[in-house]
Length: 232
Image 1 (spheres, rainbow, N blue to C red):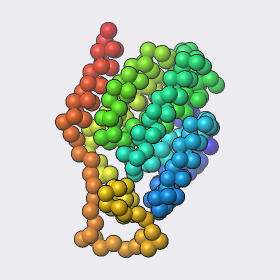
Image 2 (image 1 turned 90 degrees about the vertical axis):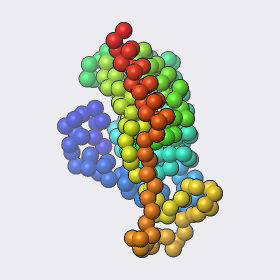
Image 3 (image 1 turned 135 degrees about the vertical axis):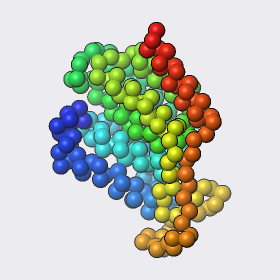
Image 4 (image 1 turned 90 degrees about the horizontal axis):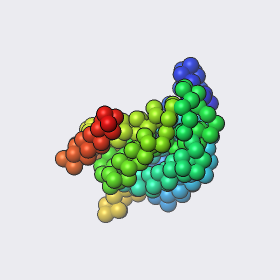
């Protein structure tokens, strides 16, 4: 896999493969019944928390983005606390991001970049779930600005950027092969008959995320906090 810090390698054929991994994984997850879905999800979250493969950072971050997008209520509350804890541990206990290294990614910073990249892509598709972690996201992004230097700052600004995107854009939320799949009240689940099933166009219904007053107010609060910090 290409080096995530190299723009030249990001233009390689391997990078094209990375871009295809996330929609492929999304399609697989969408085809699983709830028990298998939960098994795969739990093992994937364990993999993220307990392993670091720096060269696979972009691929894993994109896969996480699609997993959160497909089921923000079920995934983001599980992935965000873990990422926050691991990011703080890398900075406070391992000294990651403490050296101004220019464009070079130091070996001790690679684990931090792994978690930050996954956090950024998860935030981009968390939608209204961001609002359930308003205080934590604001505190984490300010913490990152206070404790990191050099090339890590790019990833820190990306966290704010992706949170603002998630709150301020109108986006489609329904990517499953059956509607209301993750709605426990609806009680629906994927079965073999849903694989390759043809659906009449008049029966298609899409769920959208639309901008809310609370979302706009928090986006403004987050943006204002970082602008004021930059000016002081």
